[in-house]
Image 1: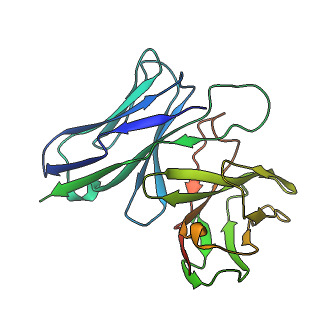
Image 2 (image 1 turned 90 degrees about the vertical axis):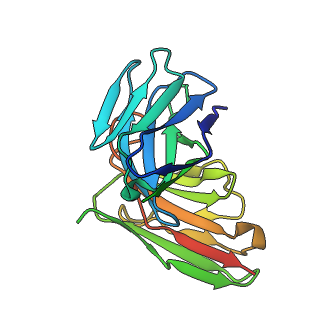
Length: 115
Length: 116
C-alpha cells in the first residue's frame, strides 16, 4: 500500500520567516493534495498537483510536485500567525484500474508561527 | 454557502450504547466519506459512498456501519461503541471520485467522540 511521509513532524518559526514542508511517497504519485487543518477542526483544501514538475500557488503558499512524482514540497513565504495549523498531504493510490480510488493521507506537519 | 455539516460536534458516551453521527452536504455531491483522525496515525478512511445506496469499506471499517439513502446524508453508526473508537471523526464530500479529478473534497468540522 502507498505510504506518505511528511517532514518535519512539527515546526516552529518566527513570523516573517520562510518555511518548507515535504511529503514523500513510497510509490509514484498520480496526484497530490495539500490540506490545512486548524487544531481540532476540519480540513481545508489548499491545492492539488497532478503533473510532474507542476507548481501552484495560493496566496503566500506554493506547492510543487517533483519531476519523478514521488515528492511534493509546500513552501510558505513570509509566514504569518494565520498560517499556523497542521498541514496534511494526501494522494490517490498508484493503481488507476477500475473501482473507487481511496485517498491516503500523510501524518501531518504541525506548524506554529511565533509573532 | 457550500458546506458539510456534522452533528453532534462533541459526544461523550459509554461502552455499548448505540450512537449515530450525522453528516449532510448541500452541494449535491455524489461522493461522501468518513474518516477518523488519531494522534500518530493520521487520517484513516472508515467508509465511503459513491452514490445513493452504494457504500464500501475503507481502511478501518470494523465496528462501524453507514447508510446512504439520500444523496445529501451519510450517517455513521456505531452499534456498540468501544473505548478504542474514541477519536475525532470527519465527514467529507466531493463532486466526483477523489483522485480522478481536481474536484475539491470538502470536510465537515469534525465530531469529537469519547467512549468511556
